[in-house]
Length: 212
Ligand code: BEZ
Image (cartoon, rainbow, N blue to C red; front, side):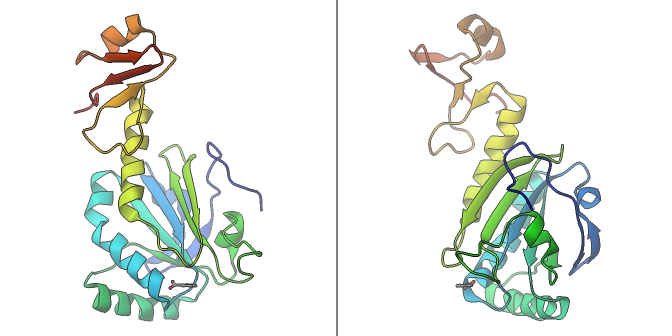
């Protein structure tokens, strides 16, 4: 196990999931991916997180993102829990949930932090690009549910900045102005950004979102 850093290749694995056996890289194909861990089945915060993620399924699909959850409980437990999630969160979970009983995935992705808890995983999120490289990592403690709208927002930024010479400023959302990369001269910016740009300072130049 080694720490996974941005730009590293996402470790591949084969795992049993609620939709059958998956080879992670093959399953991702040309899609983006979100791999996220849950401390344990039949726990309240996790139940709300999986429900919320399921309700955002069409938002992930729009962005060509496949979602895969991992928990160290077994498949029977997962299937029973998913029934509860569907019932209590009013949804229909379609994405796979890995049964990581041997902690293979949890170990590969350093999801167990022994000084937080010896057995359960923390709440990790890995966003993986179509090149299988890690684009984002997040780590939350078991006691704090994640904000999956924020994960979608980050994916929007990652997908925009992968193809355009911009970065996204604080609290950016789809449609907001972007900042021009410092490596782009004003001369280059004039052709790169036909909608124009505003030079607030030589190092702070704003332009309308290029792909809108
Ligand atoms: C939960 O998902 O509710 C949870 C799991 C482990 C510790 C605390 C909360």
